[in-house]
Length: 156
Length: 197
Length: 169
Image: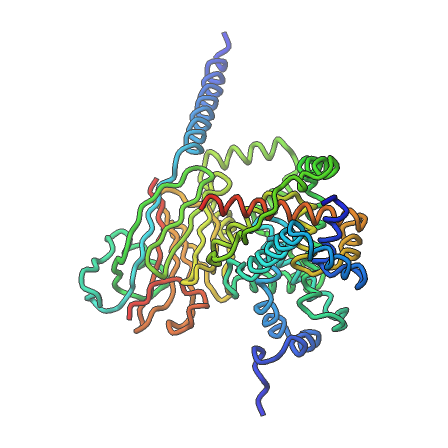
């Protein structure tokens, strides 16, 4: 009796099962909506926000921002919107009167984020994959040595 | 004495500066004429992304050919010709034969346009700019490529029939028939949209 | 009105007739209300088209639109040996040079089974970035799963520059 035969079959079976599971997962991922959250955030070194009613961002977002090469100590949330993106679809998200982004699903795995100015002109575009839990942060300087941030986070 | 900022110079001065390699002068020309060049491309291509790409390609070509511009026409006219040629090349490559043959049949069959009642009311009078733009775009979308082309070349570019015939590679008679058909069809489409108000 | 007359009327409206023929059309128009109505229709359509073109606005900011033109001009003017294709990156090079279909299939399977490597992820992000201004910075902190795009303009910069955020004055 050949002792190697069962081992070889076991390896082939494991490989085929793994490949099938992976393909099934990919097929499911390709047809499901992607879930996102967009946040408009104000960054400052003052402990209390200039506007009453603004709450600090959640701790895990604060930790991620703290690890970036931007220098503010406190971040307050101005607005937040959750939305879903179907495969091949797009969603326009207005976070304030002056700030809106458009998120598009491209090439199955990537998303394209477009930023618009107050005149609704396109001023920038970023295309990249964004996996669950990852974020794209767009930011710039605001008056009085503060900053604004638009945080796009993939939830699912 | 400080030099005038580019925004204070007229087109001719900007072109001469750009011909000497002043890219900031060229950028000022782009800022001044970008809407018009984009509008020409959009009228022909009916697709925003393509119109943006082709208009940018036209600007790059204009920079490369600047030394050939001899100020015989306005810079704007010279540039619109570049973008129109790029659009026509792209349309020829895209080969929308099916739509073109249907329109050709309609023309050859003795003039569907002659059966359309004359539109006696100005169909776009009193419309807000955005609404006017939307209606014209919807109407232009329904024209075939040759009919849209003749409208752009005549109504937007102000080309004479003879010149249009050269650009489109057809006879003057064909230009006149297509132009007439396109105008009547546009008038009918705009009147139809007005009726829905 | 026959087809020939209609095209003659159109040519009159377009200023394509010789003076003698134009005068003849004017005499005809004086006595033909249907012809006058058709002429009016042609003029209304022309007005509408001209008003349309004046209303069209390019939907990109001045800086963003120019940045792509400038980039292409500089790319074309660079010496031949320095010229780099518009889209580069480790992944594009890999796609171009991996020769064997079998090897490509194995590589694809490895990508499907394991996470992307750091270098490939950076190339994926940076290869497809376009912003109004080359001064904008992209920073990829892939341990943390965060991409930062920072626009380093002063806060007082006019709105036409790439400032899409809230100002809290």
